[in-house]
Image (cartoon, rainbow, N blue to C red; front, side, top):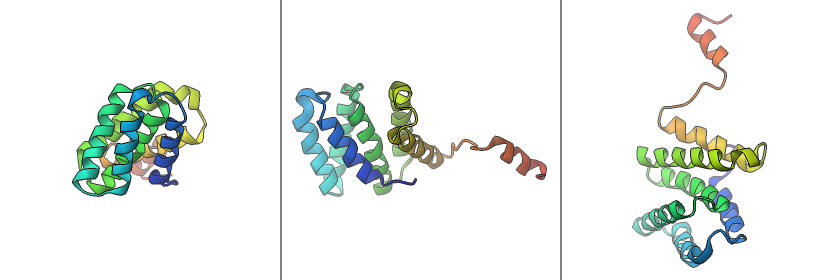
Length: 142
């Protein structure tokens, strides 16, 4: 990745707060984000899980959904287990399916696609970026 997911998470969170997309959950989200960002261990993990549950209630909140992707990568670095990689990949897929067309070519789209590949890689599902190169590698090259 050529960006810092923690910084990207903060930027996405601020964008989410600038919209009305969070509605009445805005205060709870801000409290959980503060706990997640400032603590480690069980409290941060619980805050992460609460944020993910809230995200299921706000599928159209673009900035918040982007934020969830980045904090899932942070969770991967804290607890490297397949469940977090899978959740991250699901979030990326949902985000790109819902918002990708309108974000095509943007920094956000590029970052989400970049982190999507990292989640895939963590699950051993990396796609060949240059299939013809991979084919040549197995056939002895040029």
